Image (cartoon, rainbow, N blue to C red; front, side):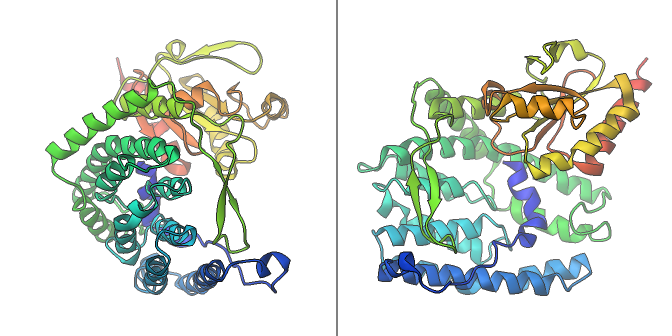
Length: 436
């Protein structure tokens, strides 16, 4: 969950949803209902405006000035109210639900704390109960974990999953997201508090340029104000843990449907049958609970024993005294593969003091084996049978996921990349050398 909003500090503003225009109407477009076409037009106009927004922002060469531009010229201020008005006029219909989906999607991109994206999502949450019986509401629920922390997500999901007419997909995955949201809140709030303290102690900004720590500090202060008191966070953590445990032990084989976009602007979507190898509800809940319980910074890393692609065995227990980097990856994952040169560099630099394990979620074992044979992956590599037992147990829901484990076997960092990863590994290895 933490990576959800850390990246929002800058990169959320830099990700364009893509340029799309309304193409000349073909046979498919002519078959759209009037309300569908109206929604397509709103979303298309928003996408086009985003292109201009990003182009103008990129003219600001100074990072601080660019950030100010992003915050003060956000086109969501115009389009979120349009989507909410559309929903009000089509409440209870599938297009009304899709309007709420797009409000949640826009909010997942971040923006100013308490700005039009956040306020729009809060308004959308008030009306989500009108769609409890529609399976497509599952798509909205999936979006609620993105963007800034929103406390109203919790009572909304409680009410939605207890609705007498709620669809099974809404109940199951609403409970899953509710459990995830509650167990992550305390950890996220603690990180924010630590980051504010670091900035107060003179740490440079990680996101707005080293010379702008005050901007980052204010961001975190505003974000922390959205969280409740410590007692409430403790209660949420306990309740969320119990809910995830119950789901994990339920044996539920309910699996998430895939989304199919029906038009170029991605305004209209429909649910398709689940993918054959997708994780069921019980397995997903078990992974999230395992992650929340065992995979937190400062905790001892859980036991992990695997068979490497060459047939050898590898275990964390055997790495005692070494710093370990574990990367979850797969063929074709751009951000994953962008890390490979750094992993090779660290391995060459630190030798036996560093152990690297790649856990590959490729659908085909041959893809992993070929990457090793080609020399692309020069470290220890195991194939996880697609998104298999390790990826499931460790609750991986994004790639790359990266864990750094210190020489004593404790989790030292999560999801570092680039220079930050290299610096952390080097510092841990130095600390190990200084031990008597």
